[in-house]
Image (tube, rainbow, N blue to C red; front, side):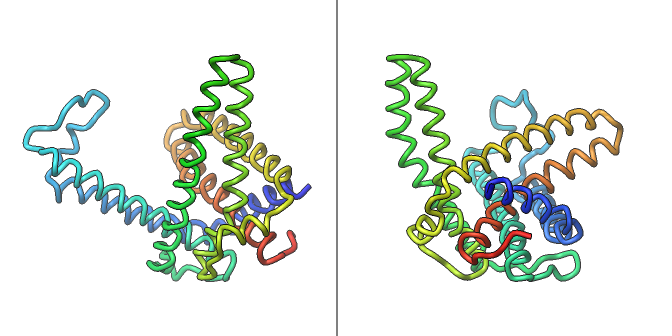
Length: 255
């Protein structure tokens, strides 16, 4: 069962390369966090005034500075996330190891990766708009039928994402491919991809449940929770895309 094999391989990929996973993700994440904190001072945003009860702008903060602040936060967050993701793809597919505790920063690859993600997002939105209209109409006619339509729509979007996903690792390693080529290369894999989606979903739920159990443990529970939710789970999801590229594009055998 290819879907199960891809999932297991992706899981083992992260677990047997934990050292490299930490080298690739920890320092960039710390740099990104430090830059985000600095932005509060750059835009003179009083950090202590932001909490769940905040209903308006803090004193002295204008709409323009507030928007610029959040746009800057989004840029820093996006760059750091894609820096980590691109570095992981390149480590696995090109054996490009991080230098010390800092992975190489390939700005052109990060930009190419971001471009593909945006295109995939636009494609999903283009399908969701008419799909939502159809599902909404179906719910008005019959709730059970509407639910089935919604499930089919969401499943179809996820299958489509994974069918197109090889364009992402391809962009990361400097071997760009068209969406048509990715779709053609993954032909006949819908059932296996659906199994892969199901396994990933169940695994995410299980990990979240376990995190909920250990987070109450002082200090160590928090460390484990952060380690799992901020490092292990995201890299497993990225590894699934990497593995799919290896299987469907490079025709690699799963060990």
